[in-house]
Image (cartoon, rainbow, N blue to C red; front, side):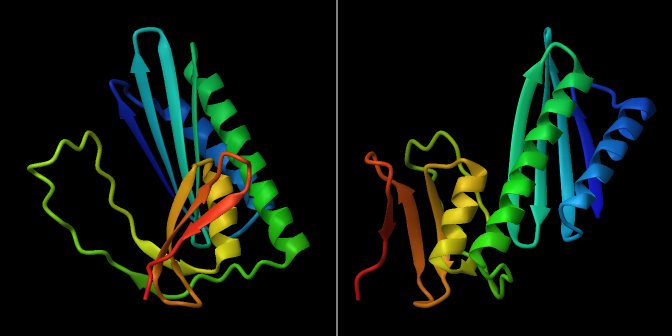
Length: 173
């Protein structure tokens, strides 16, 4: 398991680094398949923010917390990640959702220089079932999720509807 700790407008002290590494060890009781944990620690005036990104078995878990002390922010972020991991583990066990993710596909990068885009993100689109995509979307807390449908081999978008249900956007033939 790789642990990356970066500080923005903050020097990460050895004591803080050791504290984070000890907190990370507690995650191992939920799963041994964590490949990478990225901590981004920021300080803006009196706000101490801790952002945690955990990559586990093809899924990504994320937590952002903000308090007036860095150690408390790290604790709250890790508690949220632990809760997400526990929820993920229970769903895999109870619902028997297959959790092996096979095949990764890179998407071509387009030039959007002449449009008014405020934020741009790039990420690999992974092949998974609709059930896995719904679980991943719920774990991330997003309103939509882009994935490659393992059955149709096409890129789909899963989204939350206003009535509480889920919607699926597929490309027409």
